[in-house]
Amino acid sequence: MTADAKKKMPITDAELIRLANQAKEMAYAPYSRFHVGAALIDDQDRVFTGCNIENASYGATNCAERTAIFKAVSEGARQIRKLAVVCDQETPCVPCGICRQIIAEFAAADFELLAADPSGHFKRYSQEALLPDAFVLPTKP
Image (cartoon, rainbow, N blue to C red; front, side, top):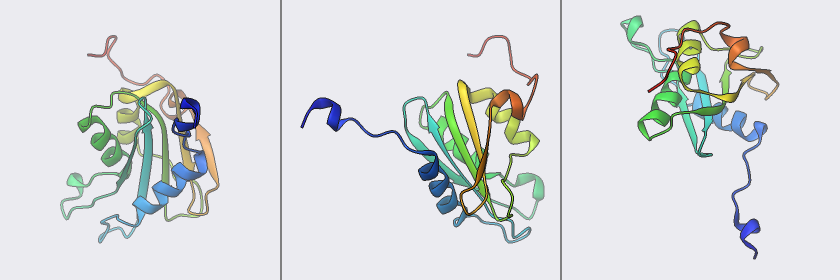
């Protein structure tokens, strides 16, 4: 087997959406009953997943996108190349405003969001399309 044959195959959009759908099944949503899953690929081709985690104090609730991003950052990721989001609704699921701001902080220049429905149909968004003129510091640490 050649060295090239041993290289990890890039994850497909469909696979990333499938992983987000799997993560959705782990959601803790006893109040809204609205389950959301996310899966991302960082700039090192690592995959991280997350689900929404609700709390009786609604402000303490965490979205699936942030769960996945925070997991990635806690493991050393600093740039996200692609993020898939899936929820219970029949139309593609897009991140809330807070998640869009977090995405802007960690999005790679070529970032793509795959906003999907449970059957795998999705819309593709750039970071700029999600949050035009996002608040970011002139220089990131």
